[in-house]
Amino acid sequence: MTGKTIVILGGGFGGLATVQQLRRALPTEHRVVVVERQNTFSLSSFNMRFMVGEIKDRREVERPLSELASKGIEWVHDEILELDPAARRVRTSSGTLEGDYLIIALGAEKDGSGIPGFAESAYNLYDANQALLVHKPLQELDTGRAIVLVCRSPFSCPAAPYEAAFLMDSTFRSKGNRQQVEVAVYTPELKPMAGAGPAMGDAVIGMLKEHDIKYNPQQKVQRIESGDRKIVFEDGETSFDLLVGIPPHTVPKVVREAGLTDETGWIPVEIDTLETRYPSVFAIGDVTSIKQPNPTGLSLPKAGVFADEQGRVVATNIAAKLRGEDKSKKFDGKGFCYIEAGDGQAAYGSGNFYGYPGPIVYLEPPSQKLHEERKRLELDQLEELV
Ligand SMILES: Cc1cc2nc3c(=O)[nH]c(=O)nc-3n(C[C@H](O)[C@H](O)[C@H](O)COP(=O)(O)OP(=O)(O)OC[C@H]3O[C@@H](n4cnc5c(N)ncnc54)[C@H](O)[C@@H]3O)c2cc1C
Image (cartoon, rainbow, N blue to C red):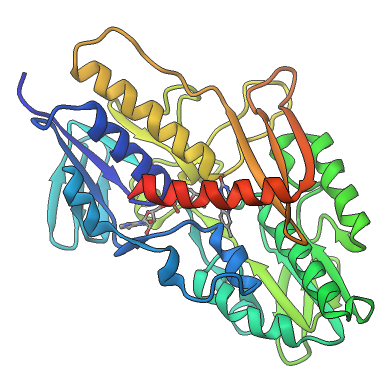
């Protein structure tokens, strides 16, 4: 058989899991090519540690993508400008690439520019540099209101805003000024972590109450007035002294322009094979929209754990096909996430998001053991992905 070319668009969490699995499973006559504009890879979950000052330098937890070459993976260090799914072709700033298979793992654009005042007023929790920057004002805030603001749904890692609130709470308690600082979350969601079902939402609301963190659901921000330190919602307003924000998420422009999205604004895929409506073109991770196969109408959350597993499923199936093997793997909707709870502890939610009649997800209460487990897993993931 002549060698095939598999092109992976995006070398983030899902894209890297895919290329590593493909390279392990395929003989070298087949090309595995990843197109990624960044130089390095890291995990977004480190932003929590940046925020509390546990890690002070990004470089400690970044890995250069140039290391992929030693594993036989080609890395095209470029911006993808145009995508033609029917021809399985991409145009980058330096040329054109065609694949026998195309795997789209371009994630979500996280852009606060659509919310007037966001850039001037909020520390963007989803940007590593901003997460590093928020450490100082967090330490310096003696009195007032520390707010976590979710601008729009859906957003990546549904636990992250709540983790940020728990970490704020624990920072102020260890400084001894928690009585002087109000901590609150404002979000358009009805309940936290909606994709995991209402029981998970209630459990997180219970944790917030225990920590005296005010939960303000169904709040859709319109603008932020930086001078007056005021957030204006469709219905009401509130003040802040320190604002940590999660900006709106959208599908990358190149994906939208390729006509791959549906009314959700994301790429629809087969829920178990991740194939798009174009043959041999797959999409995984945050760029997709996946309805859970149960009557809840809920979507699969956007999370690295799903991007990673989906990438492995797609890679395994492509490799099996190219090796002439008659077997296939299905993505089964199972996943987990740690929820940083402050005081060096983390909770752990896990289960089956394809469960019936709804997601079957359990929450293990916070402990130091889970926090340590998470830290080890993050470092293992970093080593494995690059
Ligand atoms: C603060 C925070 C904490 C999180 N914590 C967790 C956690 O604990 N557990 C968990 O499972 N998930 C967590 N997540 C979510 C997780 O990071 C994402 O779900 C995951 O990264 C999605 O993977 P992906 O491959 O779909 O997209 P990404 O990892 O975002 O990768 C997309 C890649 O595509 C590249 N790209 C985009 N457009 C172009 C273009 N035009 N040209 C070239 N390259 C392009 C980007 O540079 C990027 O590297 C967290 C997220 C955040 C923000």
